[in-house]
Amino acid sequence: MSAEFSVVIPTYNRSEGLRRCLNSLAGQLRPPQFEVIVVDDGSTDSTPGLLAAYRFPFPLRTLRSERSGPAQARNRGAAVAEGEYLLFVDDDVVADPVLLAAHSTAQRQEEHAVVMGPMIAPADARLSSWTRWEQDVVDKQYTAMADGRWRPTPRQFFTANASLPRLQFEAAGGFDPEFKRAEDVELGYRLRRLGLRFVFRRDAIVTHHPRRSLRAWWRIPHQYGVYDVRMWRDKGVDEVLEVIGREFHERHPVTRRVISLSAGGALRTRAVAAPAVGMAVVAGGAGLFRVARWCYSLAFNLLYYQGVCDELGSPPMFRSVLREGRLPDAA
Image (cartoon, rainbow, N blue to C red):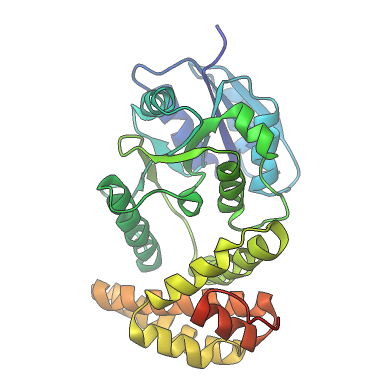
């Protein structure tokens, strides 16, 4: 019997996390027919041995590439998939026992849908204060979508837990390997152009076991800012500039003021963001999570908008986007 779902998992040097992920897929309750495709993106740990030695109660195919990045790894997995639907998950998540059943139900109910589910923190986890902040941010989005206060958009298309019809993925052209950050969001905009709807399914749950260092966390917001501008400039997603401007005006007044004073000057941005992160780490260690969250939010926004400014290439253009969600008429 052919598979209804192909579960595609890119992995790199996370053998223990991958083992947990595969074991959780082996424990699915009432799942549709599915296969698993693991794309090992050049791991140097015990991942190849794990994939060669273990046997699971589902068809498992493994591919190996040499550090091409998660976008290209997912494309390689999707290219050999046989399922009607693709389900993308990451190698650091554990699937809820009804994950596949929930995605299957949603796909049958919604024709041409991109189905997304929540990525929650382990109940017994001791998260770093910066990963706790990240989890709080996405939890607010999940709650708003589940309550119907926020309609899912391409900007919530996180490939740690998302499914879509395979033919529509192929029609969209897959992930753009040139995007080293936000490659899922960029694909989401192309999927929407094809007429796909974005659906949030609260019972399609994965548990996330993050291992992000503070150094890695620091790099992320600037990259998001850069690639948001590239989505507008290189991919023709005009609404991105409007989103950047609108979200800026939704920020705390102090945050907006600091961004206005600092962005455009990388040294000024770092001079404020670095102490904010330092205060956040100290506050998080002392259990002052409200203070830590505010400091992380300030630093993240500073670095994100600096990335926007850097990629736009001009502080006047940047200020116009913040004020009006567009470039000045003369640009």
